[in-house]
Each structure stands twice: as C-alpha cells, then as structure tokens.
Length: 338
Image: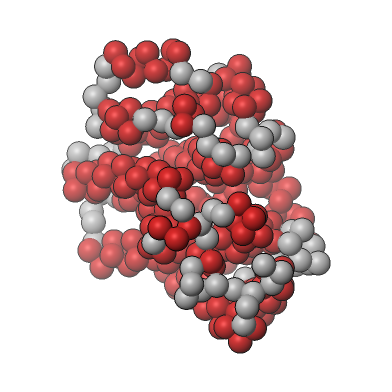
C-alpha cells in the first residue's frame, strides 16, 4: 500500500495542529533527560537480572540489540509511568516502586514486540502456567528448573515478572484493597492471552478490541498498582482514573500502530489501521477522518489529565509533556519532521 507514508504525514499534521507534539528545542532537552533516566534504570535492571543475562538478551534480540535502544525504552518507561500516576499524587517512595513496575513492563513489552517482528520463537515465550504460578505466588520445582535451564531471554522475562509481583505484594494496601489486587492478577493473564492471540491469529481473524486491549491492559495494570498505595478508595476518583488510563492506553495503541503501519503491511501483522472499516491509504477523505479521530483521542486524554493533576504546570517538562515527547520520538524518520 503506497498510502501509508501519506497517512502518517496527515497524522503528523493533525497531531501538530492539536498540540500533540513538541518543538525541536524542547524535544532535545527532554530526550537528554529520558536517556539519563534510561542509564539509571539500566543499572537497576542489571541488579535485578544480572549483567551476563542482560548481555545475553541483547545478543538474542534483533531490533533492540543496540544498547541505546534499550536505554531509550527504559527512559520512556519511566516518563510514561510518571505521567500515568501524576494525577494521584502518591508519596515519592511508593511512586518509585510503581515507576519500577512501569519501567520493567515497558522493557519486556518491547522485548516481546521485537520477538514478534523477528518471527517469534515459542521457546522464548514465558509459558502461561509459569506466569500463573508467579502471579499467584505458587512457586515450585518447575519454575526453579525453568529459571535455571531456559533460554536467556525467557529467564530474563521470568525474573522481571517475578520482581513486579514482589513489588505488588509489598505495596501497603495489597491486602486491604484485595479486589484491586485480584484484578491486577487477572489482568496479567488477560494481557498474556491477548499477546498470544496477536501472535497466533492472522490479521483477518483477530478483533479490533483484542488489539486495543493488548495496550490498554498493559497500562491498566500499572494504574491499578497505584491504587494499592492509597489508603482510602474514593469511588468517583477511582472510576475516573481507570477510565482515563483506558483512554491513555487506547491513544498509545493507535499511535503505535500508525508508526508500525508500513512494517505491518509488509509482514501481515495485525494493525488497527488495517481492519476493513479503518483501512487507510485508499480514500483521502476517510484518512483525514481517521487522523482527526486519533488526534481528538489524544487531545481529550491530555485535557483530562491536566484538569485532574494538581499543579501540573510545575512538573518537569519530561513528565508533563510525556505523550508529546513520545509522539515526536515515534515519528522521527517517518515524516520530514525532526
């Protein structure tokens, strides 16, 4: 399809018109901070998984093999998680734990994306029984053996998931807010199932909701973690935040698929923009309606965040404009905008 680049040019223009991008000077400052965060988070990840495992994983991956790519992924993991939790204003020590969860999740999500793009080797996927055992804290011999003899990438992902579950159990209201805790555990498995369905089903056999949910659930887990840091649940505030996190995740899903459009066309991977009712690059009027819809979702998500985040203007640029920074990062090289 020749129109994918034209579509992305249209989308960039619409995002720019709706203040969903930042200028080159701000972007340069923000990326310096994000890469600095990434270096720090890389050291934290190495402490969790070990330096040799880290090196082995880099060697096994194709698209993420350059260490700077990993550092960027880790830095954005922190920036987006800071943005996600900012409306709730939780204590800084607890926020650091939630940020760690977000950083780790962003890393293993990126690892899976690259494995899928490279033609996933099933031996590198954490088995569902293993995830279930980790999430529900049913450790046993099978998990121990898997950790010792599995491929480096699988063992690395297992270690990262175990660390995130350990953080979950250490949050102050893990037991008090038991319904939220159970929801998180169920969402881990739902996210896994959505990932596997994306891998196993062709473009014509997967639903739009499944593709959206793969991203939405990813952020929803992090959002729910945050509520285990809050002593009293105010239902209106809780419902608003969860609804907003879903909006955030859906916007990210549309943006991610827009950026991957050309690659997904060539590989046959599922993409939100390639469903019959959404197909782009055929009708310019339809394309313009599609980019307006995506931009409107982003604008609404950011407006909601600003209205519900106390003193948001005082937050560092890299946090208060995290979605806009991501937009520019995603689109570098896809348009003539730099």
